[in-house]
Length: 280
Image (cartoon, rainbow, N blue to C red):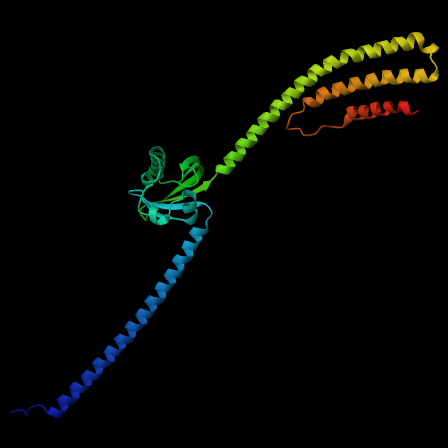
């Protein structure tokens, strides 16, 4: 018969097994601690990355929003959008356009969203009105982009809207000024046309009578009187040139800002010099 196991040896084996299990447990605890530290570090990095992205989104000066593709509910809205619409983000998120805007506007926004998602391509909306809580009606230039998954299925819609209200007002004001300038230019041309004809007749008479006087009585005049007569006829001719220049100048279009010096400037100077006769 075999002898029974020795109790001392069994006790040693059990103690060794217990030590081994403790070492494995310690290793598992250390691994667990390292894993937790790594996960905490990763969570902090992810939190910092999200905060960085949120800061970028909030510092974009145009309204930026994201909607889910299924129900078109707002999932993200930046600070510029809050300020433009006058609606807090907490109120916007989880709701759609029909919760905030007039039915006609909301239908338009929704239709454009569906066009983007069904077409799978961005669209550009040069002008669209929107009613806000604090700023009344504003006009936006909006671009909408579908966000697709790996299978090409639209999951989200990204929108960026720029407030162009002041730009439209400036353009409208500029258009009014251009129209007023065009009308003023037309009125000036009409006046110059009439004035040129009305002034040319007396100028022709002055020249004609001056020439007759010079022809018939020049020998009877002293030197000073002949000088006066020459100045009178020369001034009449130069005035005729000025009238013609005025007519030409009135026809200059706004695309040609040059008034051009030319003969009429010289004629003005010469007419002015004739005034000095009294000082002789």
